[in-house]
Image 1 (cartoon, rainbow, N blue to C red):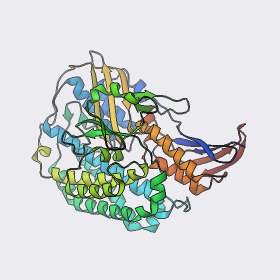
Image 2 (image 1 turned 90 degrees about the horizontal axis):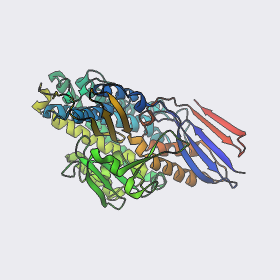
Image 3 (image 1 turned 45 degrees about the vertical axis):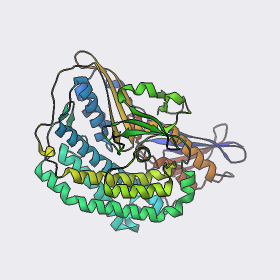
Image 4 (image 1 turned 90 degrees about the vertical axis):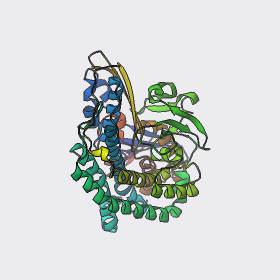
Length: 474
């Protein structure tokens, strides 16, 4: 008899979602869907607001990655003002984004995902969390917490707040870095670098035990999209859009965010509030692509910093020139943390960070603007149309998690079909299905612009909808 397994909501992610596993009469998985079931609609209720408020408004979409929206909104405002941001303002924005990537990746790796690696997929779910990790390895857990604190404090030293800092504005930023802030960052850098290197060593040591996960957690061909610097270096703020395929061929390069509608389409499905972006030249759903740490690592020629470049060489030796397993997002996050810390270290001797020339001011010179920045989870687009008074007439936000939507659904299906057989839906198998989603570190509040809670409710249903069994996980 055909059955449906529902994981609702998925745990250890940001936001509220559920996974439906459709079992055929033999108890094998015939299909799987990753549903995003929350909706609030930031794009619509921003209409009529001044575009200058968008950084502060859209940052409230999410408390995990508000900086990403601050930057994308400010860069869109730059286009509407038609100004060139002072060099000090751009460097300060870059510094804040580096801190943002560090804190978000540290949260993802140490708090949300490492309990699976270090405690085991089949361990007691009541202990398979950050508190269980603290009990099992207090030094590593404490180091992960302090690494995230470092990234958050970089944000705070610049914007006076760790979350929703009203600091980036159209034309630049409000204030420079203080000498005290610079000294604090410089003092904490060695510890942060050492923690990241320890995490890399531990993860590489256990990778050999996860060959099945590498092969089954979203191992499939797709395109990869990200910003890349003009010289091919890893980029997180400027540069241009690049697409590569799974064979390492550059499919498109030097693309401008202003033209995103020429190469990105947005499909919708009736069973999810999360849109399904795709690469237009290949159509839907063949134009599946991935964004985020794995895409940035695959697309760049190099990081441009010595420690991260050495790790990148080893990563490519292990995974190949192009890593196609979504499980390796975890490894890519650690590489990016290291690269961010090295770039922060370079900034510490830059006098521009203390300069007062941080903002260009102008009136409205364009009625449309598109801003792009690399959020921790991937490429983020803000597109605004305004009237002559600067009031928003139309808003479109293309979020990284949405751009991974096709890939997340494919990952869930692949994992479920490998692990779930003969109606065997043990807790450990369900955790592996969830873990496939956690590879992408989805931010569902950003993607649908809402907030949710994360207990787990699993239902096994007959074809007529009647309940066979249900399980709750607090």
